Length: 318
Image 1: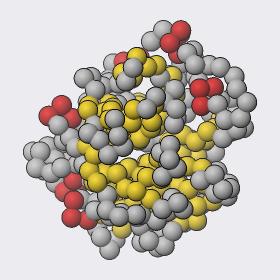
Image 2: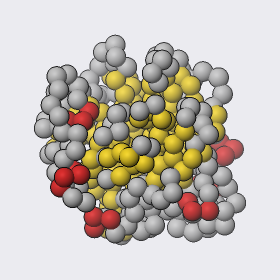
Image 3: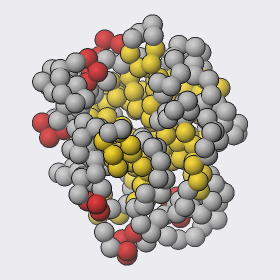
């Protein structure tokens, strides 16, 4: 990717400037196991959050130069206590939103012993770093479908809040390196409307996407943004522990769809020297994203990278 493309949208504005969050190169910007990263931009600090590592339930990192350089806060656990429905050290793929009233809301997935699956839950804090206080009950479990994982928050232009998440059908079996090699199970992406508190679900979730032949055994890691009036759902497909893992996206004219998958993934193995890129989170305006890529398969180790996003209509590129 050319330096020119990496430097697009680098204007300096007052307040929160999503397009000011940039990096001249992909990185890695965090050379430690930091998978499934999420990004939160605030006026003075940019934050990243990641799946558990060691005894840390939710990792956190900070950037004071608009996403160019990052510091992993070693020993800091943004979620030191999981909800009473969950067990520790089973937390995956967090996302954090600013609710706008002095409260930050974290969404996360963790294993529920009573359901024998992962469920999606929420936690709140008045500090972006935490500690976050978990809600007593999960938002969704989707037990019959294999569990619920990979939640991410979204607020529409009318103020309505949502989360998206994956029903983890690939956890039900089917063989292969990450399950469902025989294609027996669905791994749909669900859209759940939320109350104004961003914690309480409203009504039933609706399915907005599922895997197709090009996706291998699964799709996962959904994140929803709105770009120039088009709803854009980024996601990963294929097995996270293989070099087939990728970053893809789909677009829709309305939040509930129908979503049309792009003709080709956004990033695949070999692009910019990456292996198994995935778990991407773009900023809400769609100008920048964080994601992980694999640097070692045994033990599985994934570093955090960044990219500036360009658009040609509804077509994304990096």
